[in-house]
Amino acid sequence: MADLRTRVAGLEMENPTMLASGILGQTGEMLLRIIKEGGAGAVVTKSIGLGPREGHGSPCLVELENGILNAMGLPNPGIEEFGDEMRIALSGGAPVVGSIFADSAENFALLAGKMERLGANALELNLSCPHADRFGLDVGSDPDKVADIVRSVKSTAKIPVFAKLSPMVPDIAGIAMAAEDAGCDAIVAVNTLRAMKIEVKVGKPVLRNRVGGLSGPAIKPVGVRAVFEIAGRCKIPVIGVGGISTGEDALEYMMAGAAAVQIGSGVRYRGTDAFAKVCGEMSNFMDANGYSKLSDVIGLARRV
Ligand SMILES: Cc1cc2nc3c(=O)[nH]c(=O)nc-3n(C[C@H](O)[C@H](O)[C@H](O)COP(=O)(O)O)c2cc1C
Image 1 (cartoon, protein in one colour):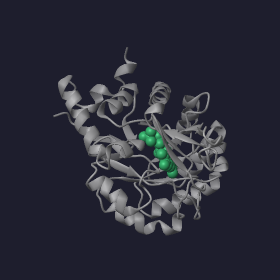
Image 2 (cartoon, helix red, strand yellow; image 1 turned 30 degrees about the vertical axis):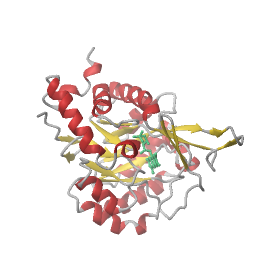
Image 3 (tube, rainbow, N blue to C red; image 1 turned 45 degrees about the vertical axis):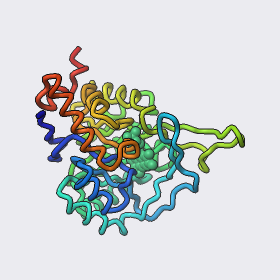
Image 4 (cartoon, rainbow, N blue to C red; image 1 turned 90 degrees about the vertical axis):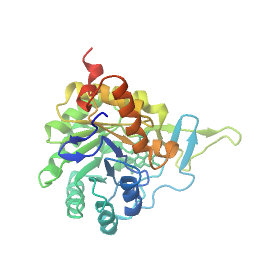
């Protein structure tokens, strides 16, 4: 059996699959279930802000032929209300990554300190929500702003810091380099792509917010390309996310250079045990093809 245990940016994981932010990650019970029953090597919380936030109105999610379009708008209870959820999630024994969002370097640093005190094993800076204006691409598409945010969080954080980036910038590897130079410990790529669905029968956008973020199978080639570009320039690990729901999807990201992967929409397609299923399929594929450990596949497609 292929050995799937791994260590990524200081996190010890039983396997390289993680729950992506925003999918079932708002309660401790659900995060615990994803660890215990789902088989995830680590989980990422829903993105949490300084105060409570309602998010966009309904409809805020629609399933398309080859993906999911959402405009949740970062609804969350705020960091002060998230302590109990973190305590429950941390009892699962796998790393819990606290995802945070803010509109300035100062607020990111403040929030990072609070999330670290709640026990998070790492921080994921959401710099890439495509439908939350000042909390999303406004901060994540400018390499100087990204560097500023990472630097200010790193100046006090004692746990690893990940930057989650958007594929909707001309040079995602350039943004990743700015984060790495500022001291970032890993890059997470990618967040959803800004997209829209119109209901032709009524001639109106389906989402109340009109535009949302596209996830799922449709964005996998975009994510794989982004990981390939980032891994070609950065030394820090890259965590691949976007359209993964099978072991082969995960291996494709790893062959592009990802050290670990996150699964979001795939949970909707394959259930809360998507992680165990993906790992089983990865192992089977690796065994059948003579790969005994993850380092045999990571970056394989880069060597040609
Ligand atoms: C309903 C929904 C909510 C999401 N909320 C967040 C969030 O709060 N923070 C974040 O960084 N990403 C969020 N995402 C993006 C996912 O973490 C992930 O980057 C994206 O969906 C691509 O992965 P997937 O194709 O496996 O879903 C959300 C995605 C969906 C579908």
